[in-house]
Length: 214
Image 1: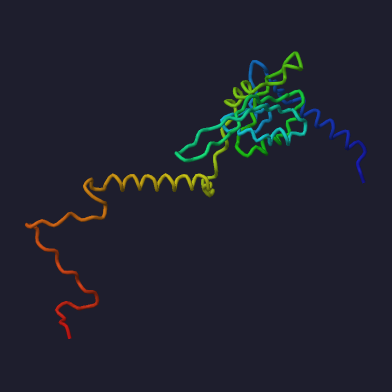
Image 2: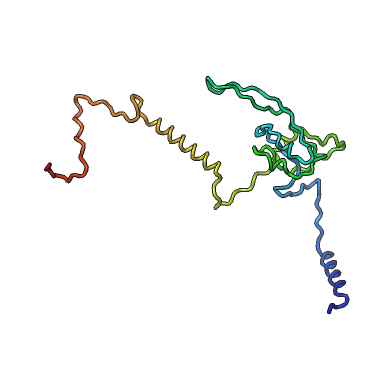
């Protein structure tokens, strides 16, 4: 059976505990808040990784990403090769008046060109100024925090392992080439001279010392 007035007593107890606690006031903007690393402030652009695949613009639910590009013909890398064409980024803009901060564009980018930045001070008096071009997006890129360190017992990423193996093979190859004699191939022995003794006869395997032929 419920005691009459128990709910009121609990409410008063919560009120009394709250009244005795010291209030904490955030002195913003004089003191900047400490935001968590994965805060969704704005989107930074690392345009060196952008290949103008248009995947972020196609997957955006609000259609707030505007991309313009043109094609350039690259000369052949080797004689006899063919020319290749590549997309060159002309414009990359995001309308943050329409953006709902879902992060789909960052998730679907296959080349890691978009990142979350905790920067949030970009308010404007005119809504048309909330469309930020790639220069501003690039400046926000340098406010992106570093990714958290991996667990010490975690498995090394396959990309790093492959890159390390390639670097070790290249270093071993360069070291082997540096130890080769300059006068001939690496496996060639120096030609015999008249003063040098003849080479010893090759030992035949499977015979004991001092054993003669039958």
